[in-house]
Amino acid sequence: MQDVIQESFYRSIYPTAEATFLAQRAESLDAQALRRRVKEILHTRDGHQGLSVQQVSWLLQAVRSVADPATRAAIVDAARAVRRTCFGNQVATMVPIEVTSYCASTCKFCGWRADNKDMVRLAISETAIREQAKILARMGFSHFEIAGGDHLPFLRNSLKPLVRALKEETRAVNPEARVSLCLVPMHEAQYTELREHGLDCVLTWQETYCQELFAFHVPSGPKAWGIDLDFAMTRGGDGFMQRLRSQEMAIRSGLQAGLGAMIGLAEHTEADILSVVIHGQRLIEHYGDAVQPLIIGMPAWNSITTTASDNRESMGFNFHSEANFELIAAIYLLAYPDRRAWVFANGRVAPQVQVDCIESAAFFTSTLVQIAPGAYLGLQPEVAQRLGNGSIFIKSSIEADEITQEAIMSGEQFMHYLMPHDAFLQMFSQRGLQVVSDRSMLLH
Ligand code: SF4
Image 1 (cartoon, rainbow, N blue to C red):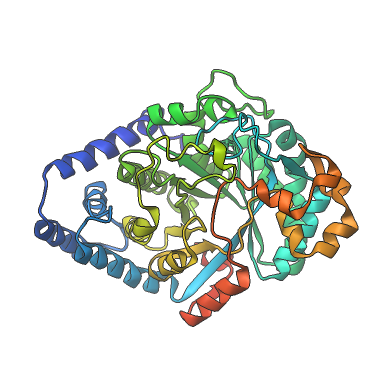
Image 2: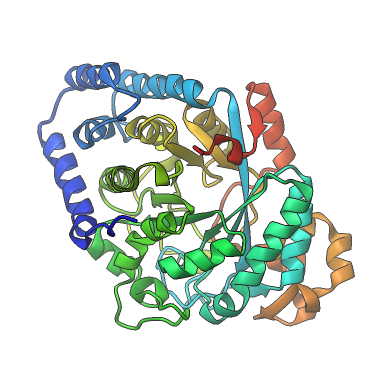
């Protein structure tokens, strides 16, 4: 196994990205000149290489709704052609399963931050994950993501059995089933052990690659300081660096990895997007064929469900995510070598925008999204009733008899569109898209 990538590389990602993007912007190309440059880049793109950092940065000059529509259309059209060659009309659907909304971190953009006292908190049992797994696997999903807050005692005690239970139940319905995590970043040894319990993939969104901005938005807790091998917080440690290394640790453990930055968090969100490209390209360059297709997430900075404690507007959010979502997805797809990246269209934008994005760039997507622990049991109330709240939740901030489906859904992590899985399938079929398992698109 190769040496790990040097820390200096990780520290250089955002400064490189921001300097590149701003230097090009300072050239102030007029619309026509930018269109010419973009077309030349698209024309000469080599599918074995993807695009250089400079070239991606030029495409990113077209982000923001004021940019030239013809330039934007050219980028999306080029991505659509690549998408067709690489993935045909196929799309893989995933479903996130939240296991705990308790969190010891304090990210200012998140509804589950520790200091948000308005939030209902819940943590589920192994029984609850098994029942949800059955419901979701029978609906046809083949990729199941365990997600949750930085609830370290819960993760220390429950994560391994939860991964195993989810894999067992979903495999019993669909032998193609795969399991991923979107949790606190871990060490190589922890990922290796979880792989033995059935884990396939680790998704870690960096939020921002700008260290100062990360420190501002993530001031304390495991996300700010990191964790040790026993899931204890390393107070005063470097959570920013541990997070940056999560994909590398996952790849070294034989797992697929996902990366992404939160769209709209940084003032120059384009520099964060370029950072994702620099990071992913380096992983491919360093680890070669050991890197399965990178899942490129596009979380947008959405409002949270407890509106009185939402910081988004007061902290100066100024990015039109929906107007730029498809374009950003297209740039991500073009940036990476063909088949080495799955752009992940998620439910933080309107379903119409999400499906447009799938048609032009994204192979991977979420359809049914209910981001609260235990939420999917509400799809089959008779199951929830049979189990009873006592065996569904192992911890809650409200009394067991107060836990209704409405109370559960009030505790979602942030606001998003809620369209049923069947309605997505209908839209896919209207657009000629065919749902397949993501396993079918792995490299080896
Ligand atoms: S983003 Fe994650 S780590 Fe941060 S407060 Fe929310 S749940 Fe916790």
